[in-house]
Image 1: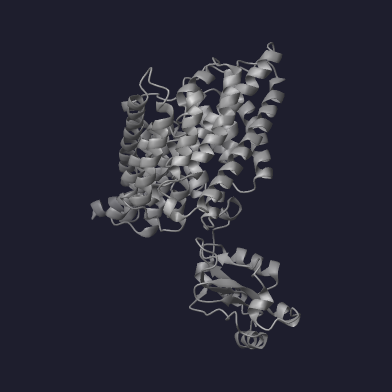
Image 2: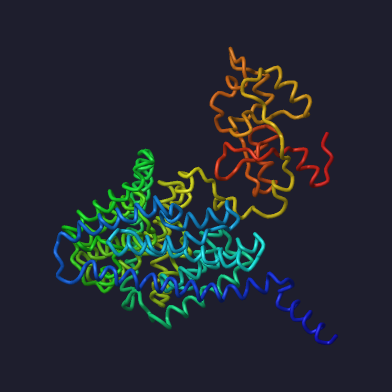
Length: 566
């Protein structure tokens, strides 16, 4: 009896009231170790393959042939065997979290490992961090399912695996935690914080036991003169504009490639490989993620013209490689672009004002965070990441100034962050930064009505009016069971469009019809109803807003809150 009481007190003190809580916390350690080992193997294999493909003193033709052949091989593997391993990996991890109940197939993990190892080693201008995140999330998903955890617990493990992967891939465990919560999960106060921290620390320990501090050698930073703050603000402007060019070009090229016949999907990555190969013929530093050259730029040892040229070339090469369908991420290339932009601005400033400016390497370091904040739009992660790299508080203020300017410019000129924009191109509507904080309380899924039929587009206006009277509402979806066309309201019926004989003619192309998702709060549904002057809105899929799951009405929401609505 005393033992049972002690065990009950221990469960209350730790918060592990259920078996799943105990399994999940143990799995956090296991995930951290397995993901850490996987990412270390990924880094070592990629590096050794690259060394064999580009031995010292190798012929110039290799710079064209190897990226082209590598992209051709990975393109076929992705098209034939591993379609879910295409792309960065971060959007895919978010899709699994919000759309697929945390499911990532076991096949995707080795597929991502194999394809990205070949792709990055051959010199494709993409990064390893995004793929590492998808592999980490995939390992967490597989382990959670194998241990019989419920769907909510499996979903909660995805940011745990993502954090472990990023901590091992980039050697910044705190930034890895913030990125997983800020970008992947979208909630800095998530209840999985403890598990995310535990897995991140475990993976980082594994990394250090095997490889040590493997990334950058950052010299000590020193602010020479307060006037430098103005130069860092200029760096923020240049970095913000560069970030916008990077994102817009990537999104534009991706749409262009998606318009090509699907049968050419296996061949499309070759376009990116050939382009970066031709660039590498003249400037070999553009090949691969380029961390070795970033290390040199951070030390301040670089020619100005080459660094400026590399910034432009990488802004072109990475979008081309990514948009054509190669496997790899944009996390690392964004840091490369930032280092080159920062090195360019810092070198010009130091040449003009040598007595009041620091070494150009300091500007390259700040530039890395500046471009990351402008492209990825996670400013808090950006600051902490650069701080972890330097372990120097004096870098924080210049970094915050530059990041803030870059973030503002990027947000004004490119409204959607890059991962959100990529999701929208897939027809997936992920929770936005504005709506995530509201996903508490009563949700639409708790009050929605399923199994309802939309009004037929061919129905006449009189039948819609009769339906309103029958359902005692002033709006209703129009479409079929598989395709929602819009929402018709009583206001439209009272002031019909001339010659509108059917509902399809009345609503036209549907326009900006009101809708909500099942995970939206009920309060948001009320806002949508109020904005459009309706009392019934369709509940649609995040993967396809034309696919209706049901409807939510004003009466149902009020009834849930205990208010009788006549």
